[in-house]
Image (cartoon, rainbow, N blue to C red; front, side, top):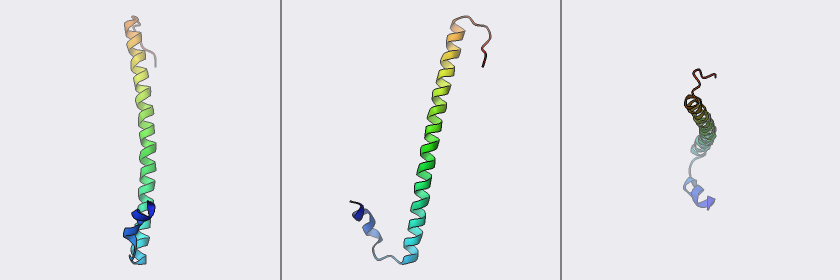
Amino acid sequence: MSWAIEEWKDGLPEKALQKIQEIEGQLDKLKKERQQKRFQLDSLEATLQKQRQKVSYLRSSGVAEVKQ
């Protein structure tokens, strides 16, 4: 299947192939960065949700001051 994906590159000049390879490398790097940022965001959202639950519990328990 990968040969079909690469077939469109057949016959392109060497400079064009190098540029395509460079752009594909940048794309892979950006995909990895996006994946890392998504993981960070998911972790932060989970932490925020836990803090909200803690605050909600403390408020419902009648605790006047919430410590961080």
